[in-house]
Image (tube, rainbow, N blue to C red):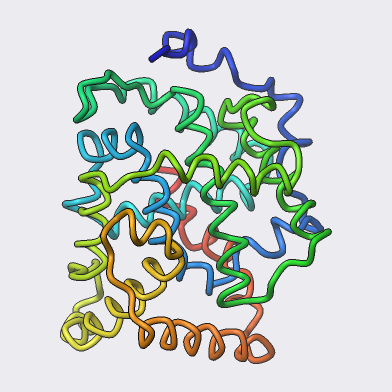
Length: 294
């Protein structure tokens, strides 16, 4: 396994500041308009399963992440990162990209198969970024407003450009959507049921309580069971039959019908969605501003 020569120089692959404005989505971009739909949270578990089933990513998460002890905190940090990259503007996105890459320089160890790993290995590092694009498009098809073929092309070009802010080389991700679909299929062959997959599935099936105001805390036991059902249904259902079989996950005809019914209901809600829910990104950053600045 070859480690990146840039591990000692985390900014060596990063674009200069003058290029940042050209790499972030503008308000009229597909990414800006569609990546903040509140219904996309339904695919958070799906994206995470795609990520941690890669042996290198899974080993890093198991050994270095706080996911097991603080899954809600992990989700919050993922939203902080994603929304800053898309909606934070060139300066905030560029700084976030450098921070993310620098943080990954410290993540290294040994996989269960005995091979050494480093979080900045190009293929798994790029895969994590790619899974978010896969999840956004797939979630819109299942639960939101499906992107047209031209919209998918535009979205992927924009998402690929964002990867440059993370130090992902232009040659490390496919040029267009057709090539991206082939890339996803080829990467999927490498995925396996890692220990981190089990940790994610456990968190989805038995979610612990998030930090809630004291007045809402008594409602958590009532909300936990249906929330776990919905999150598990979406996350496992979106994997598709091939990955479900490889991971040893059961899926019944009743589960498929429930997932389709959930998707139908959420898609039907589109005309009723308020603007803040149709695009949660800008409002999220306004609310999280003080915490992100700390």
